[in-house]
Amino acid sequence: MKSIFIAFDQAYYDRIVDMLQRSNARGFTAWQEVQGRGSKSGEPHFGSHAWPSIASAIITIVKDDQVDGILAKLKEMDLATPKLGLRAFVWNVEKSI
Image (cartoon, rainbow, N blue to C red; front, side, top):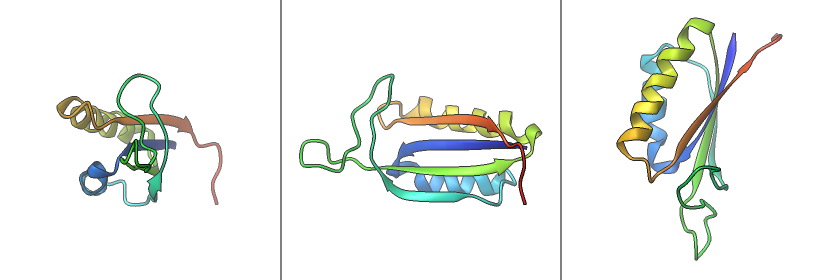
């Protein structure tokens, strides 16, 4: 199993949740308001007067064979609106209960 952590502009939230559902990634945990700045480009998401945007984050645990499809769909979203900001990271899940 794999863990996919997705950090994104809050404008993506509904689209990402819908995409995960259509990809049979039923379970996830979401943080609606997180702050941060990407390492590549884009504006900071600090929720401040100077940087008013807010980011969100989701983590989902999926079967290994689901990862590539989910990442491809996320990349498609990011390429369509690169200024918003969307990143995904994959980790191995060693154990679960």
